[in-house]
Picture 1 (cartoon, rainbow, N blue to C red):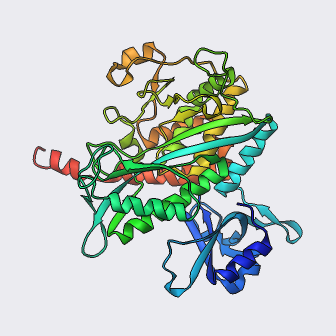
Picture 2 (cartoon, rainbow, N blue to C red; picture 1 turned 135 degrees about the vertical axis):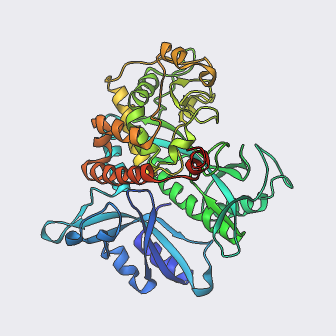
Picture 3 (cartoon, rainbow, N blue to C red; picture 1 turned 180 degrees about the vertical axis):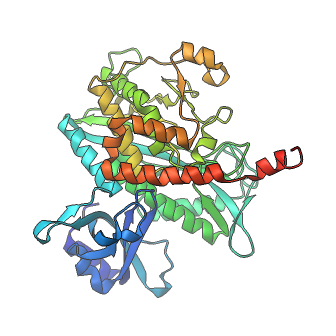
Length: 449
């Protein structure tokens, strides 16, 4: 929805808004905010709310700490799910700026939302008017203990599409859907997923920035509503060994300047345009490089392993669910690529930036054209897969870091600042994990050796 400053002032007065949350996302994908009283609304509208950037991981050093939040007025929202006993709360999603020359503010190169906007401008220069994105985020619900801490105890033992009483989280999921609808989400489906305690709620696609904003808002709502039901919602990709993990399939398509779907061609056998094939080839060419962005934590690589439906083989098909990229059956304006390797721990702004750049590189003709795979890759040997030209995604965060270092286009997609800070942070994460002695090691080796 489009808002003017005057409309925002009017709504705040009519709704008796008492607090404003100035939200932004750090490079790790964590949603942050600075909360201000309504008396500072004019400061917010004038882009003069400041915060200490040195306190945010991956932002700036202590001697260059002052940063400014520029609210996107169209993201103004009354937070209907909040506890209003202290007064109603509204929010803006903000872009992050830093002090510039002559008192002007300059976009901060480490702001993930700003990075995506920059990449979308590059896309428009290539002749496309929009990048439509729809996501399918999955999550687990676990019980809380007597102290309110998360456990690994499932709230239910349901399976795919189960209903109550087997799916005992049905009421919680329904309340999440209602809360999302109350703030403007168009919900397409909500259901129990394959694993016990696992759920999926799908909402309508949007243009890229808005879709990423929606992911961040979605996560916030899910966690808050789950808490009210005495549950903990987690978007950790693989919290439990031996069962399916949580992904975030990304459905996307490019729109031409005349409003057509660039991926559709009614004259071809499968309805896919030459542009779509080039796009897919670009994503496959850079899949190892962008895995660091789309699967950013140690635990991500516990999900993309054989045997649990998660795609770990770099390939595509218009029907085969064992491939990394699937083409859903809908055609016309609904033609899209479904990238199934992305997980819910990823920073959506950076993940979409990486995917967009990879696909555009294919469209530019810089990547070898790749054909579809119809064999069941889950049951093929490594030799059989490689004979088909199919290789695996990185098997660990360490491998993903090295692949990212070799892919200059993916580094360009997120920018020099984020490249440096992410590699530094994730190398430290991997080193800490590598030094950790796990319960599995103790149980396996302590007595034996």
